[in-house]
Image: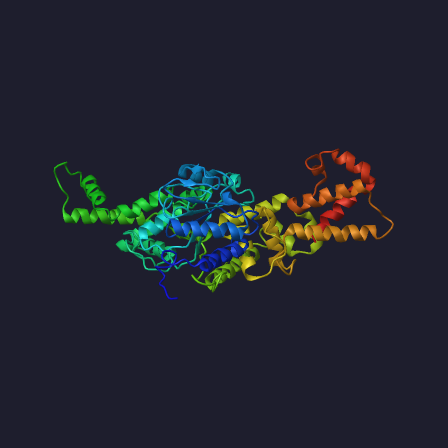
Length: 510
């Protein structure tokens, strides 16, 4: 039987094609969203209502979930499995605010104008030819969200929502689009090149408008801390204000207003062409003056943090489902940059000096020392966030253990990998657990035998070191040692208490 792509899922239905796409998506989710216990909020775009119904049926089958797991969102009311009428607004509210549904299938209802901030994944099973419409659809995923708000509907989320993922099952990202936005004049130019050109004196209208468009998109993704840092580097200007200055330089109305104000013309006087040209020159210089080398580098680093990776799947059979070569190269670049940062600062930062020395010296590593490294890293290299570097390692080598929940634990694990303390990237918590087992085994191999309560206290110390890196005697007065603190531990271990703490600090960090 022969049929065209346009006939597929309309005049012709091929269930195996839909099933292959959904199955590949399901199997790749642990790689796209590591350490998640539930499916991220996902929106699937279907060709029409009939196609949507077919998709919903197969999604429920492939994920082996009940009906509430996957719902259709359309303009018209639908019947649920008990023949009750489902109000479209209610279904959308559930998708936005509740745990279920995890996956919504739509034709066009939430392509525009509807805010679903917890949405983290867009799966295209229909093509889109309009550039404006495609950008509006992608806009459903660009809403950022802090971690607490995201965890209300996705409990296993370990970070704030800082990006979203497009899964392209039909080639929508590659087909020619019409109605291209007027602002984007140089789509192939890197944002760093555009900024450098403006800073160095370029007066190219296409460059100014394209840069304004890129900054406007990036502004919606940036975190409050990133906004604050950018304003410091730009002399108090926000991303939106910088974009506005770029647009003003080529806005005829703004140019006229500038010329009138500069030459103090009356309300009935119009500026000459020469006056307007001089006014535009002034606007161009004012916009260009906002860009410095530090600002260009910072914006490019922030852009790298928020850029997305697109996973493409063939229509009829899965030909590829994984990270592309560009992503591999980017991961290698991130790892190299991180290693260079550690090497460059090994003599300047206390914690790094400790790591580069003998293992026994790592016993003196403290929580505050690691925090200092993280603070300097975020200030100097915001694109090298520990969890992002960890994900880069996951793309290029086998890692031991799950991605850490906390940035500090991830940072210690990464530093150990860079300095050679671990041959492969290993979750520091796993390292501590392994070293603890070895230490206890050596202790109890002789005459010493720990009681059940003593072992319980030793495990609490082990868990504390796994997240705080070093135990001070004073720490015993706080959680999780609330049941007696220093006094109770002394009752259990006597004069050996201080020696045990010193041994554990050294052994577990080895």
